[in-house]
Length: 138
Length: 138
Length: 138
Length: 138
Image (cartoon, rainbow over all chains, first blue to last red):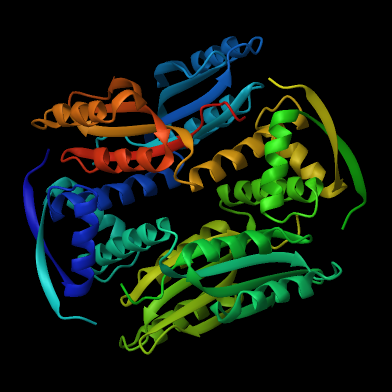
């Protein structure tokens, strides 16, 4: 964490009143915390717009594990990705369905490509990528 | 516009430095303007989460105007919506294709439903809703 | 419009049943129309991922027209963009607030950049870009 | 899995050609698989629009674990949620930063509210919710 500084924001009382209500409903401790969160979301979103920055992606996949060769295919793709495929969590949703959450680290474009490949595997029922960050620049 | 006040945000120098670079690249005049924009985006997003708040929606539709009865269907649906269908802009993209942009005012749920119906009309090739605001609460 | 062909989709009866209910609620004429729409949305989304493809963007801006020099700034930016800024629609929301909808044609990256610049203008309260298409490839 | 049936989609050869290229680039085995995926995405998105349907959410949080009382706060909130908070994965990103991925099952509105609360905790640098499904209806 770097040194803390303070800067002032000028704002209309009406807008500030509405923001205060919103951050209360979202349980924020104070305005600074809420503003810093808005800033960080903005920075992460921008980072994912460029293809070559180091990012972290959370890929979620829902599938039927009875589907032949599906688990092997998913595992092979993660291994091909190399050390960027950090770890994964497997949840049994019911007798048929699993949720697999895979944490991946790498360039934004490579992470997106891996997500596309995994979601495209036969038997994957639903999937997607949540774009987040190494935390370093936040 | 309500009275202006000023509040302070405490933040790490690193995070502030990255935010300053971002707002410069986006051409913001100063930090307050950028922060107010983040707050407003947040408020508009929340408003669209509830179904019964008055909102403004911009519905865009790309279609082939040679498609029989399409223009009539689109116009009828807008008229059915009543006075909430404020106005629309028609752009000729090429010999076949038009873009129609329709500005609608009403409860979030009603605006979404109208957008769904318009996008579902046979011959509409692409469409979507941009959720925005009457400006009143911003 | 190119020649029509027909291809078959194999699908579980349960999933098909749920899809039929969904497309009925969205007023689609038939399954083919609904499937074609899903395909087109997918193609447009992919096109916007590459920065250099020709696209159409609909930029919406809500602002207070009493703000000094705002309208001039917005107009100047659109003119700087050249012939890609096709046309615009202006809606009076109330005594203070306007909605301006600007239709722009150009490379995805250039359209995004213009949208960022317009949204960053002092006095613009809310804004955003709806990414759509020339219709050509749909 | 329910019985398989087959239905036909009529489509222009141009549009089909572009779709075939897209699904090849995404590694789909065949058109049926790609179409079923589009249908499922559509169904999951609709389900999350209603607040009272049972869903599965994947909540990702990046934070600095040196922040006092943060881990306790996150854990307490998950426990308060009851049996819906299925399990979680913890990844060490570097000396300071962690990524925690929490799988939650429950009504869409309750899952969104928990995600908002978790993201609002002081010290959480970035967070978000990926909306997915129990797989049941897919």
